[in-house]
Image (tube, rainbow, N blue to C red; front, side, top):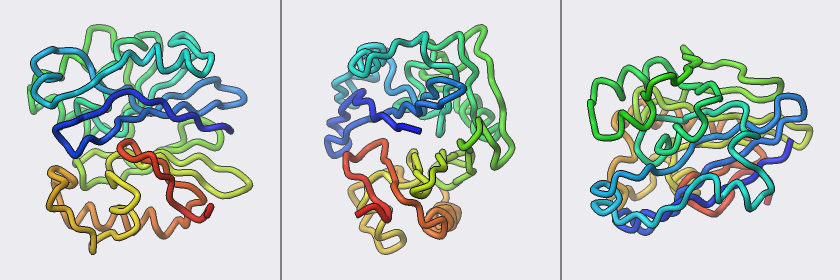
Length: 220
């Protein structure tokens, strides 16, 4: 299965980090999209100094359209990961039940981005298979309902880590990482550390990051 990285945004107020989504080209299901980027309320885009782009334009660079996306997986429901969910109203959204509960309770400006009329949820309670060779694993810590996505292959597993680690350096250094410049890396430090250690223990071949262009893992 091919994994394609989409360049969706840059958040200048947080260390100028990129925002990526990922398309998994599944041989039988079709395109599975992991995270949809930032939405478009102007006040939020200004506050975070976001340079944004439409997910449809990012897909078009890879000869795909929103209609090709059959499943959407949200690693979590922060503004930079679910902002363009409504582009995919035809698709089910795979999200942890605990994450949807958390996000609804926050009652923030971004609720309309994921909780719009007609949104079809596939609510998960922990680890679950999404399609053959593609599974969600609960990785709480960044948020209580955060999840990462594993793609199995003969070469070794690939992980789309969401915000379980913002960058390859944080992933590699774990508890030793200097997080002073990375506000919000975790809401629960103990759970975050446990989740990161669990991902390390999987010995993935590649680790793909929403906010870093580097790829980590055993591939190098």
